[in-house]
Length: 321
Image 1 (cartoon, rainbow, N blue to C red):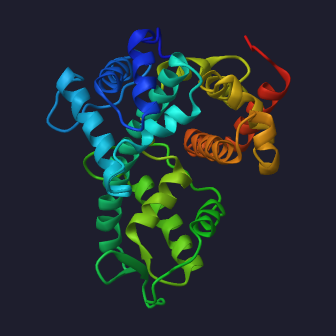
Image 2: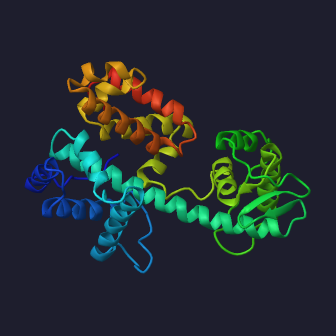
């Protein structure tokens, strides 16, 4: 990913020192503010500003960073700076720390965009289900088929996704973010939802149904990256360009240490030797890298091919063009 010129210099180095002591300080905050402004105001992104802000002002960026810390607090009370320390553990110098923090900020923005979008889809499904006799509500936020099992579904979400993708010949070519749902879109959503609930044999949370349908139809995805979209018009076609560009974007985010580790992520016993570190640090770096790649490719239709292409880059090219 290319975010433009990084804010390298004394601030990043000072932030490294602060984080080495286990706590972010003024330099870390200043670095995050600079990178937050750089990420949100880049020409390659179009993430919406937080609620209550009409643009990515300095206050809006501070609001974003506060939300990032607040999320960490909810997930792990007292560890609101955890994402900073995770980036520090994987950084080898100031520039690599900045790249990792930029990735963390963008991933957070993607998560927020998807959460908001899924909420919109969830509310739309609530309305559509309520007006269709094929579906019936169970408790507050679960749905099942009419006269179907009312026991709570507790299975694997992947199984529901497979059921959704098994429905052939049903696609959505038009999606409106407000107003009435077009009939063809309504029919597609309800047809696939019916197949999912039939497979579940139980009452499924509306949130899970929305997640499955979002994946099935690639609906309401997070804002796209302009430079990435530009590649889709190339002669090789979307799929080939998509995989190659995505793999190279991921490659640029990785430190030399992480690039050496990528081909061996499935061989945990070798991490310590490859990284030249202790077992604990090697495990932290490897686990963080796995999570970074998962988050970065979770919404890619060809995520397996993207990761395989990245493995090839890390195993066969020292400095790809």
